[in-house]
Length: 203
DNA sequence: ACCGGGATGTTCT
DNA sequence: GAACATCCCGGTG
Image 1 (tube, rainbow, N blue to C red):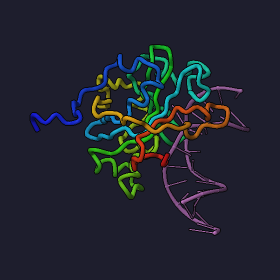
Image 2: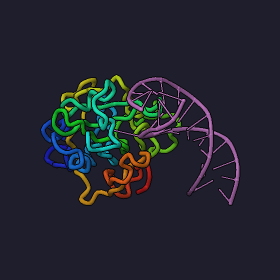
Image 3: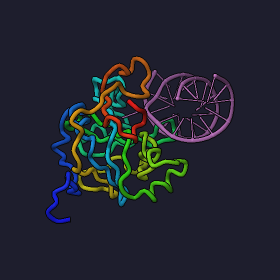
């Protein structure tokens, strides 16, 4: 394992300053990076950008509230919210402090800790069903609202965003999923690894 | 394969 | 009281 300089398995967290940019620039570059919670690891294959005050689809669109407080803080922290009263979904906070932008992590390719993931995803029959959606992803890694505000660059609560892997040269792109009409459903702010079997939907 | 509906609770009107 | 950045199951072709 020495000398072979593979794609990059540094195990080092991303730099906070690298995230202090527009979420639409960060999002496609997050593809291929690794989200780790304890021993569980997955490679990011699908993301969506939510762009603070100018984005009607963003939780931050109507200003700060108790729920979205983490979004208004510094970049590099994890924003976790509850969707439909049932499912945790997680975002990487981007941009400068107070900008309230974030990138929703929508799907992962499981890498390590598959056994533990399967225990938290008992209905997943195939590996590709373990983390092919924003709620499934959080279930698989054991992410809950207790992780809201965790610093991904320092490893709060054992959760880290690792600077591994490389983004695809030509990411796929589409409109965002699950937004009501008039809430930014026409904005092409979803990016994905083309052809990856772990996407929440094909294209 | 595609489609419809129920679960469930927090947030905001 | 409505809306919601979802998931799962059971129907029908």
